[in-house]
Image 1: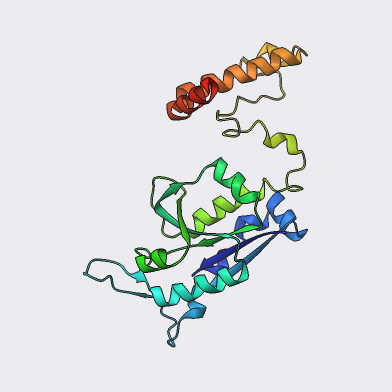
Image 2: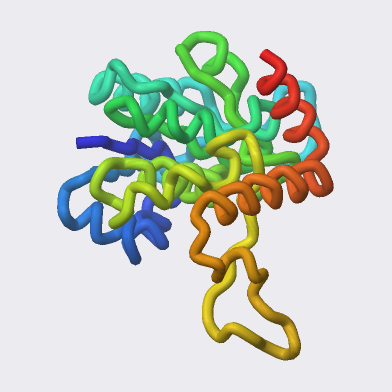
Amino acid sequence: MWNARILTLLPEMYPGPLGLSLAGKALENGIWGLETLDIRGFARDKHRSVDDTPAGGGPGMVMRADILGQAVDAAIAKAPGNDVVYLSPRGRRFDQAMATEWAARDGVTLICGRFEGIDERVLDARPIIEVSLGDFVLSGGDVAALAMLDACVRLLPGVVGTAETLVEESFQSGLLEYPHYTRPQAWEGRTIPEVLTSGDHAKVKAWRQAEAERITRLRRPDLWERYEASQED
């Protein structure tokens, strides 16, 4: 079973949306498992403090190395083979390839920070990878963790009813996905492209490929450049 372990100050946020729809059914059926480790459980004082003022001054608070370090050690002991990931805007940007890589393993351990961040010494002393959901800042790592786990869980065997639906999605082939249509045939003067109702599967496939390339070229020049390079190779 694929397992996700979350180090967090807000365990009540889980499973959240992951407890609903396909991910929730898969969780209930034992296709994947979710465990939260409350970082405050490793605090030593009666107030369960986990943070302190930044060395050198400045606003905000920083999560302490001694407390978070113990939490990380506990998580590693439970799943020594898992990647340990700190969700940070400084990290490598999360993408479909990373989701696929994580989903192919036994699970993943995610560290959700809060405040200004965590003491750098934890990152230096433990085998932790920094990963970012995108070029923006959230109040903490938990929302990012939910999004990343959803991306992984839906790739697990048995979660999505028709596995073929995962093959032609955005990013799977290096392109954005082609447009989709369904009934009614005409809506507000707009009709479904004729090729999609022609019954000619070869023409449909060619149209979808052309549309995926067109949309990627227009909307994501960065992806298009990488796609072109891969085709040349």
